[in-house]
Length: 363
Image (tube, rainbow, N blue to C red):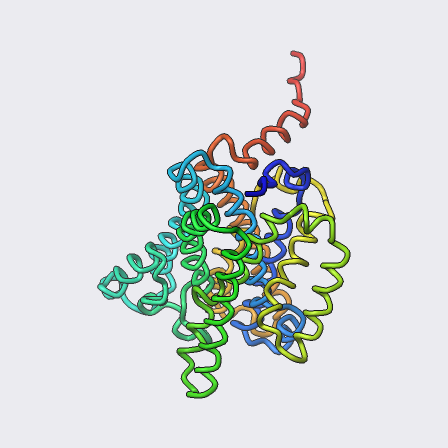
């Protein structure tokens, strides 16, 4: 078994925090355009792609989560890190929506806190958002009544976390590259089969199944492959990036489902590892907060009806509130549950030591 690239210099200086924030903001902008249906914002959906942004998120997860497991001293340590990182903020957002949106519900208090409300709370707290995506009387006049339609990816992310120990076991038990390629190809085959079934039958349910696990696993696996073979990737970076650009260009005209996930992963990790833009993580990781907060923020602004004639003002307010909420979520919730070994904690400590302390004036 080849040595793992756990001490590779590029892993210490990377753009993953900044990249994830840009991806989260992409999803936010596209959802603002699609949920509002404002004609002036249609260009955002044409230029940006929430689908590609989510796929890129899964690529980054594949790289970082597999690395996290390989660095963990035990399964318990790995599980603790993943739970601390994802669940406190998730729990907070679900609870805030369940309790706070009573203020905008069209149902009276006693009908709002009903069996449907309890089902929403239980389903969403257990990542089963599809079982109850709405709250009684909430956002019913909006284009979409879902409280937080962005959360569907979180159950896939959690399933990735669960699958990683099994994946690494197979890698250690058998040959690494065949195992990685097997799961990659299996994912592509599943997604193509479900897409074909949707086209042949006209049943949209198959298309939704294609977006679920294991349909998205190919992007996660592409990130994992590039982690395990990072030295190879670095030595051939120019060739691989050029090939990836070519594949993605052709993919716009003629779909290349077997190659597209790896091509996208190549570009994502090129920007994440090879164009260092500074230690953005010293300010915190706001990407997760942006991702899980933006949808209900947009829905609340739309139900107010204040921005029908001012779509760009609506977009500015939605993004601003989301960013402020993400900063608060990081400082009040997320950061408090991280282990001291987290690089975010270390980066914050470094920032504090670099900031000169203002001495009190002499009396």
